[in-house]
Image (cartoon, rainbow, N blue to C red; front, top):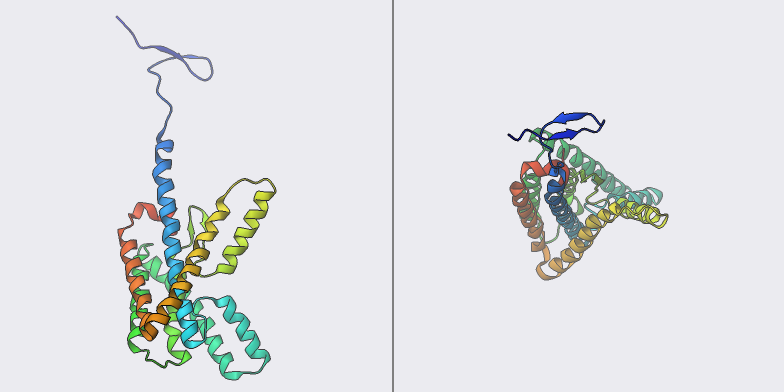
Length: 251
């Protein structure tokens, strides 16, 4: 009659039982999580693409940045220094509306169970309304709702796999990339800083696309902003909730 094997435990004492294989659950889970993370970075690039496209179309149509608030802050300072009262009021309003959009975006995400699709749907609705009401010769003020929409868009992602992400804050992305590169050159071989290139590349590609669309379709190009926001809403709807916390920037 064969009994159970005697196995020595870590302290050298004998114990009865069957030896178990080491737990490989984490190894098995790492593969899918890695794929989810890369999908999250791709989603971030698309969100930044939307911001860049909106910025380029808005700047060429109305003369103001709609999502790049670093540039508007410098322009506000110049307007104050030159005592251009109308520009000061408009640029100050843009900055305030962008901040308000961020705040509202956070509230929407929190109140809808930490999901992105309701927020992106609101962005699509706002951009669609602007496209429907802005005529061939818009005033700079008519694009302020798009500033609000871009503020909300920035609340769609906080981080991806622990890497902080700013969708339209390209100065911060380039700064984090540069500092990470410096640490790499000093011997810290972690490559997480490469994640900062996703929003930068997305915004650059979106801005170039916005220029081409504006040249081809004139004022109708603004409909592309709402169309892309709808596509991003549908993508977000398809993302399983279990992926959100680690790979898609919320929670």
